Image (cartoon, rainbow, N blue to C red; front, side):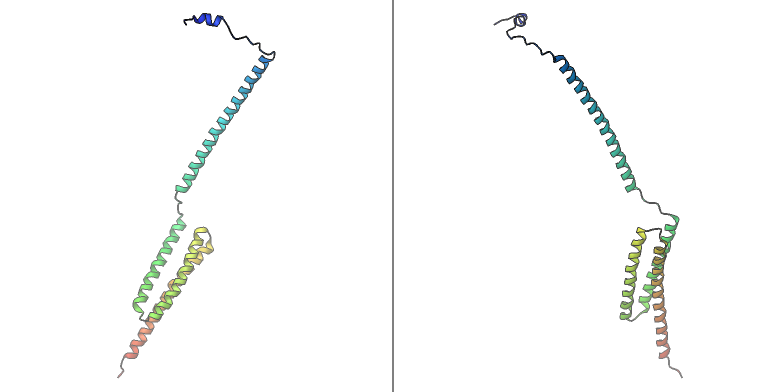
Length: 174
């Protein structure tokens, strides 16, 4: 079974086929078609790169905006200081009122009024967060705080007057 390879190819057992007349033209058109498809792939490749760059830029912009803390203006800092001062004064006056008052019904009555004012205050603060530069919202917030503080001061003065009248009525005159 030893054969020489050169002899195998010199003897061709398969018949030779003749190529069709337009074979060359068909082959060239197919090659041109492959060039065009490669060009389309290149443009898609560049579009993919451009799209990925845009996605990265968008993600960076979104990340920067979500992680950046908004800086407060001098007005906002000053307003927060005033608001904090009013709230501290309201708490002080309320505690002083509770110390002076002996009537639990009176305390409960004014506590309910203050809760209503507090709920109104919370609504106004949410409006302030939505519209931070609206002067009407700021004025209504300050007005609410002033009313709460004034109510407590008035109650406290009224109780002091009542206590003074009770002590003066108990004195014995000779």
